[in-house]
Length: 469
Image (tube, rainbow, N blue to C red; front, top):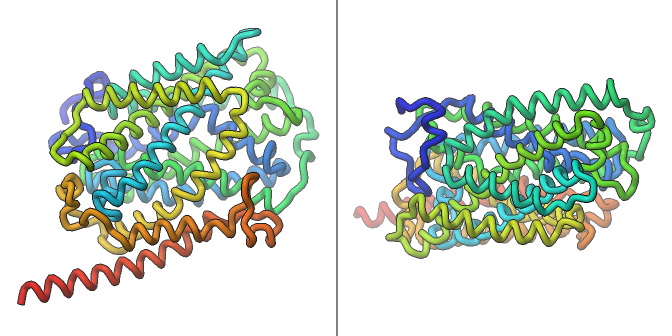
């Protein structure tokens, strides 16, 4: 397109879940770096890093290593999804119809909608708590409402404004993150005891790896939504590496900050408030920058959630082609739900967030395995995009029973390996509480689906050959 970035960002997006026409494709691979780097520089990422020392009780060095491993491994799968966008030009959940069928995909789409609402509510709570900590006696409610409004505006304008906002935050929040690290270590100072607190345990180490890996895996339903406008000649490799490095660097750095802050806390402390203590003197700048940065993530969750709701609706009413007005109304409805949840859950946020992390771990992993195996190993990126928007699913049908069965199998397969506060499976209990569920889910679901997919392709080939006779 001839429009520059500013003109694109201030123009209301008219597309929703339809394939992006060739003459509307624009952007460069480096835009994928800034969108993932900028949106990860936020308070929720810092809190997730802090889980390694506040919940999993690891010492500093082990916590850092666990966070690095989890992000580096998890981002591989996230970035493989990102590489699908320039080729197919449709949102990720629309493309899921190619694996599960038009109606079968609704199960996954419905789960992902709940995920977006959960992350959106979590972000609102974080931003509200941060802004409230700047004013003595203030509540989180005004900050929560402000974060909701900022995210809503960006989501209504759509794809290009979200990219532009993330680009600004990549520079602004990046500088603030650097300043925060310098201030904590060289101005405020941290006690030397933070490097000797806690004791290593394998259950804590693998739990921290899982939390970091899941942070990356949870982006899998997002990424094609932000790469689908890229020209087809962008290529899979540039899209992969730009997304990979943007998301890993944008996640690892604030997570390490969360580890440092968490190690200076008391047992019942608040990590966001403690960040304010450690940055005394520049706390307003730090907390406001990371709180405003949350608005970019809010917009992403809201925008992707709206696309999923529209995908759900269009599946049921195949002649409907939702536009900008439909996306706007859907965004308003979703932000209302998330806002209500955020206002009601502020006091028990950390406990709710841990439970939410556990839930994502078990439902996203088999979907990721099925989607990537189907795209890269079975179909090699060759899909009938027009069939995605047909109610009967075209060549993909209404229900792909092998994919749905494999998805359910992948979730059930993880249960014996689960280790959470609510439930611990027998194998996890025998291993001393070590949670290997996400690894098992990926390693086993992938070859099972590949085998089922190959058999299905062979049967389809025989049917076509017979029909041609």
